[in-house]
Image 1: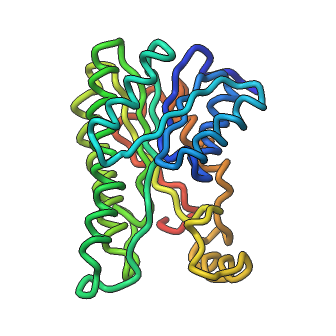
Image 2 (image 1 turned 90 degrees about the horizontal axis):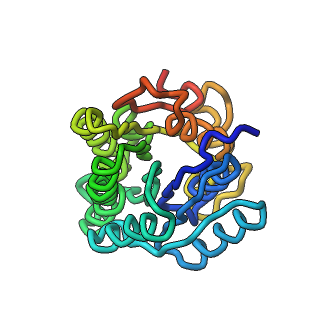
Length: 253
């Protein structure tokens, strides 16, 4: 195991979910001190416990990514508790949709945009403020292959929010790279997480539905996506700026 993040403080939002938790654990395994952030307090505590059980270092913070004061408090926690913030993985997100645009519930639309897009904007706002004033850092945002790369009927809110993340990432990357803050995004396809299931669907049914949409023939293991996040956050990708890294088994190739 390498130790690419020894001495680094890494913030992960959505860290009570499968992808966020897997990525937080991967950062910790490579030496990072991890700030575990999510709206789900029990999930935050569980992720912290898993990291500490494996010998890593972590602290938890409950955050509402749609609230600027809450997001600022999250960043302040990282700085005051651990002495800085070097890497952020802005991963918090929700699904929403299932109906055509003309039938879309407006409250669902507003909530999806608030969490998935405004949440990333607020995270970038407060993370870049600290990083730009303190020697720089690296930020990775979670978009989706259903955003700027591929559309799916009845997913207008989710696709719009994730396309927004992709373009927000590119804009912010140009704004902050000369201040030492390197910003990129990932756009995963279907991952083996609860979000990949329809209500009441079994694993076999889920696989039968999704596998034909992916040339590789399966959904991603969360660790495959986490590996890409760690690469983008590491010095190994030091010349990668404003990139939206698609990880979808060839679905949008």
